[in-house]
Amino acid sequence: MAQNYTYSPIGIIHSPFHDPAGMPIQPAGASGVRGSIEIYEDYKEGVIDLDGFSRIFLIYPFHRLDGYALSVTPFLDTTPHGVFATRAPRRPNALGLSSVRLCEVRGCVLNIEDVDILDGTPLFDIKPYVPAFDAFPNEADGWLSGRSETVLFTKSDSRFMGNIS
Amino acid sequence: MAQNYTYSPIGIIHSPFHDPAGMPIQPAGASGVRGSIEIYEDYKEGVIDLDGFSRIFLIYPFHRLDGYALSVTPFLDTTPHGVFATRAPRRPNALGLSSVRLCEVRGCVLNIEDVDILDGTPLFDIKPYVPAFDAFPNEADGWLSGRSETVLFTKSDSRFMGNIS
Image (tube, rainbow over the protein chains, first blue to last red):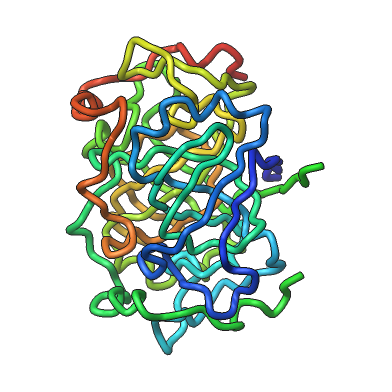
């Protein structure tokens, strides 16, 4: 029935986080945490002019996870929600999305901040964050209402790591 | 060297756009354009509580494209830029990211607006848009500076469709 699609990394993400436990759970909770991206030589030409953007989206696999749950109790709540109503990593297609601060581009190396990503995570794509396309400050935030600020001091634990490899 | 990762759709996106030519190039330019998402039955439980969010991220393949260019002249400029400094679809891993308005959840069907996506596009993931995590109105927008508002009336043409299937 549904076709499969296959992706191969264009680079790798380096961060101070070698273990999911204790990691920030969103870039907003990782303010100032530094990391870097190493773009593979074959894709170097693709980052030309990226340095004018102060924030970039990263799309990457949660590469150390296996399996998923459709109903999850996320870090910021005590009751379960459908996984697509959360940012929990154990999802049917375990794709991560983070918008991180872009500090510097030096050849194939991008220095970044606000990094909530495990060290060694493969990178699929970079897109520039464009406020006119991407910033919607007044949207309703569902079950996170009144809780989303808690992300600033909430750290990950092992709850999503049941099948970590 | 680098490992491959394989993804299989959780649903399908329906929109009024059957052909890339004439499509809006960002959700911001597709204001009010209606579409829907059909979540496959196996994943239905995953959308519980999604209805409290007024905007959602969709991650999907640009499924009708083949091949890529590392340097592209995007719709909003006349000079080339590295593909990762643009939102052009013909990228090494042709993954699309759109934040669309969520109007209604009816079982497996999500009614959406601001749809800049081709009809029949497979869907990999839905994430809730959370202003506290995702809204950064004051970021620098690089070569798009002073041009990003143009997206409101710019439509797609065939320039990225060289290898469309």
